[in-house]
Image (cartoon, rainbow, N blue to C red; front, side, top):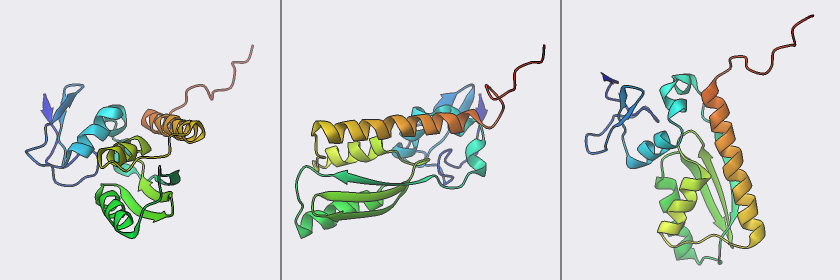
Length: 162
């Protein structure tokens, strides 16, 4: 196996020895945090292909509906937790809405939802809100998958002349 340097394969920070490494296509990838390792495992082809090294942040802003309105103390705690998450650039709560901005190459909506569930700050689970979030999950997964494939021609070639 070939060993890649001492930097995190996802965000470029210094890799930590406590975080387990991942072997992918006979290469060993190291990470600075469990979040980066999980991000890599979700789409390893994106980070292993080298496409990510020449990238600009893939910023997304989402508006999510919380299960209940938060008081001032809950708002402060929630915003602090979210802003500590790698890749999250902005988080504001007004009433029962959370507006969050993040770099999709470091964190996805799925990971943000997992954090909210972990700290018991649930999202609205009405059928409409679940449908909206499911659509976003699918769109983000497709966007990352397309980015991992690079810019090479595939189905965009003109038909052969006969």
